[in-house]
Image (cartoon, rainbow, N blue to C red; front, side, top):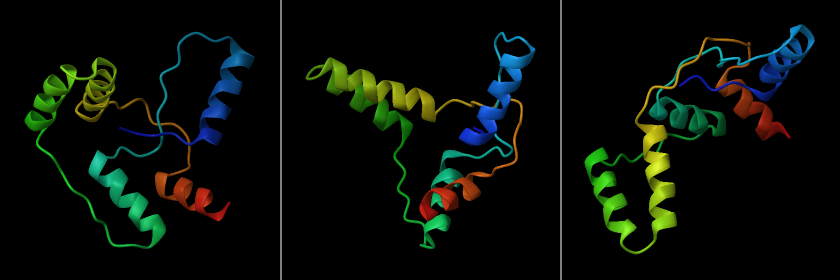
Length: 108
């Protein structure tokens, strides 16, 4: 995926309002995997990455089992699983990288 910083997105939204809108597909300047996003968060904190992975099949099984006890919770987990297992790359826009964004947020 290519996450976009709020300030970059605001510029795109302002341009769309000024020039007439419609649907706009927009992403940030860099494309990253979920693991790279996690590694970037640790880098911003200046800490070594501590990342654990779970097999997708095990998570799907957990969704099915959880459905027996809590439909709402199982649907939330199913949504998160869908987001994490699909490519979501939009045209690259903006200038603020994810590391820059994390560092700006830490400075606040």
